[in-house]
Image (cartoon, rainbow over all chains, first blue to last red; front, side):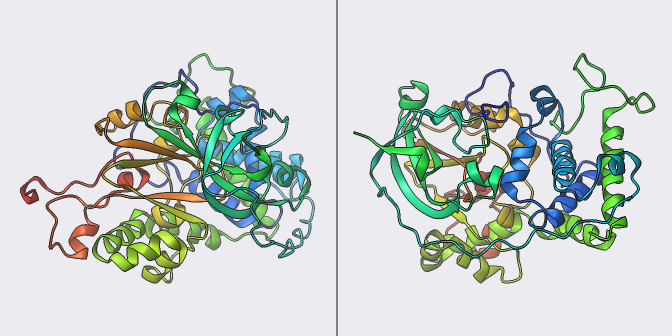
Length: 203
Length: 219
């Protein structure tokens, strides 16, 4: 989805603010939320679903929320959707229903790596704007690049986040020039990890 | 101000239907406590498990893991080769009881190329070797600008690179987590691994800084 989370190249957020000697957590509840996520992820939902739940937050709320507030919101969303807790239980903080069994472990079905592209191949990214989850940032869509490294296979997040599909695909670190992405006249480059179905061979 | 620090009452469209708690953070904290007590009451997680995870990220998992890896790569050419070829195995060599660095990718700086890591879509970060990401790494300014104007961002961190050095930005959009292997600073010839570890900062392994030898050590 073309959400506010897809921030690469956006303007208007100002300079980077660095907090010296930053603590691991700014309040105890942040660490608790991280731990709740660590202990429920893989049992009732996986990381692609978690990211998608964050991205489904209304845009203004996403931008206004702190980092761990976004995590907490995604946790509440997913644990209700998966039937682990109910909205009423969240409101009262008291358990009224027994928890469901965790989802069965996914099969160990990772296939061998069979890449369609080779290092050095010139590729062009699809100009796609899916409504659902994707890991192809907007700033690289419809752009020409060169395959730098071949990795994976990894599950395709676009289907995994929604249907528990098991679409294993090679993932390529594709290099784009600053000129191609930003119209800049220097030698700098950006490498973005892209699943095979995001790419076409350059003709 | 980090993105963790909430603005108090500016004119954002908050859902202020919780009149007893005028400060947004206290509302979030109450929600977090409610979720924790609910999951504990259902027997899905214990307080001790939560404490253990929090403590691990506060004390045990952090940039000291990556710093040792970098210092070893600076002093041992064979280790450097193994680190670049199979990062997870090379990290486990030095940190056998540390968190697994599965799907770690290490990108090495050279005199010609400076690498910089970002996650524009969320907050992907090599936690196994660097611990929790700093707030600025997860913030909209860094996520939006590191890919489109990396040199301006680096200047804000005090790092001005000559145009002869190419900046290569890695956007962590897949399962891979990227860590930068910085260059060993000049003037550290003959230093022990222990002394070198102290020079390797978290920021140098993200790519927003370069390790610096103390001024007196420079040749």
